[in-house]
Length: 112
Image (cartoon, rainbow, N blue to C red; front, side, top):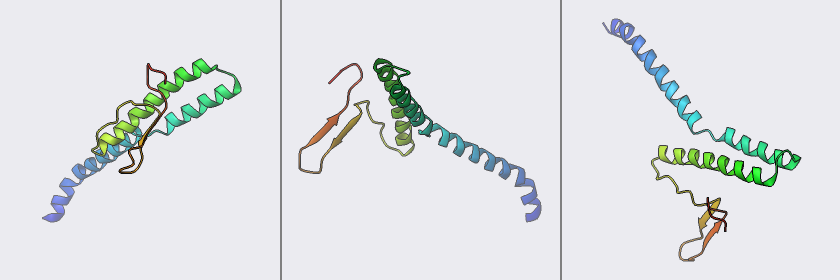
């Protein structure tokens, strides 16, 4: 009897495996930041080779960094954490009780 049950349920188990595999691959691609980092590297190379000027670099870099921040927030959401706000390039706090805080970078629409 168990053999017949296994044979009847085999297509369902196979489809579950396929759907779980597809979901895992889609999640990996959804949170993969390697292509965006490659775009940033290519952009830096174009600037160094003189293919683009500083203003073009800054505009495209801001777009790439926004995309990178979106992927980081997706990873945080999948981990069950709150997404970070768009603060700037670098933020941080130093040890407990020191009261020191470090903010380096720029904010969109505001130059420091």
